[in-house]
Amino acid sequence: MNIQSFASFDEIKNDAVVEIYPPASAFQATLGNFSTTYDIRWLCAHCQRTEITQLTDLSITPRGGAPLQPVKNGPGEWIASASLHDLLTQNGVALRPLFKRLDYWSIVPQEFRFCEDIDPARWLDDTCPGCEKQSLVRTEMIAGVTHRAERPLTVTKEQIEGIIWGRSPQAFQRFHASSKPRNEPGGPAPCNAWVFGDGIQSRMNIMSVSLLKTLLDAGVHDLAFRPVNVI
Image (cartoon, rainbow, N blue to C red; front, side, top):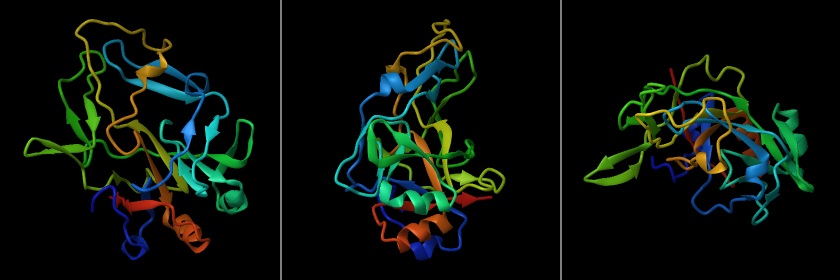
């Protein structure tokens, strides 16, 4: 199954969680205050690995009116219309106000981690001499052409326990490492240090199948989803 394709609900109805991502035709909201919304800190002296933390409410411009929208220039952010507020909160999803908007809310996901050493994660390039990590990507080369990886994320049961709507702190990104230190770990990094990644979104979002069914039953169909491999 290609990452741009829909899975059918019958494929995943007995699963615990699914990965969600923007369908190819979806309108995507835009973020207007990235540089003032996030605090970005270097994690390594030698490479571009960073940690990103939201500080203020997102300033968002929705597009098209879809009740759930990804934020195309945000690191894995999604917004939900006010019409879904009660449904989401009653099903355990935390929401946060947007800056000067009442018609949409920002989704506050739980944290989950996927298995980095199992497909579709793939390590590239040389190991960083500082943090001893490599770039984590979600593509594969076929006859010299880069393709989106078709294999699902892999998680353990423990990693997704209690997850209703989750987002990974891990990001699919290509990093460039230097043989000499160039950053101060823990120090501030410029906003262009955050690379938006090698996948549809750099930070992956998952959702419980029970929440997905609730949304589908409520008429929300502007989602693409695919199975997640649980071990």
